[in-house]
Amino acid sequence: MNTTTRTASCIEHVNLTVSDLDRSIALFEDLMDWHTRIRAQHGIRGEFAHVGSDESYLALWADGGDYSGQEKGKPMNHVGLQVPDLTAAEDAVKRHGLETFSHGKYEPGPRSFYFFDWDGIEFEVVCYE
Image (cartoon, rainbow, N blue to C red; front, side, top):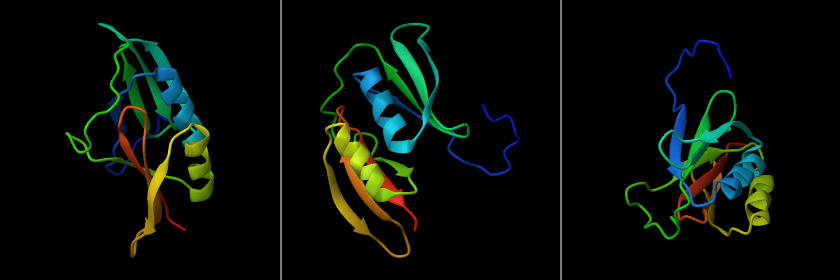
């Protein structure tokens, strides 16, 4: 873990409930070139993992329940992920059997696409070129 003092505000992590911890870990390690920082049993129930870089990560939690089919925007709209290569990122998402949509670019912003994971969580993948 990075022990240097941070000088700017940032989002350190986002915590998401998923149905299949192994499947979600594999997706984010492939898509983002991240690593599993920690994986352990939760103190009360289920299992959790932190998947990310030394600076930030997704906290993934699973208790064996089926969380597929969550309604978009209730309460979260999407999680934005930045990558250096949008084509490689889209290939990674597709390798995991997921579909991408809403490819575009807005000014002065990045090129991007979206996808839903197996639990209905929406992600926007962006690339500033």
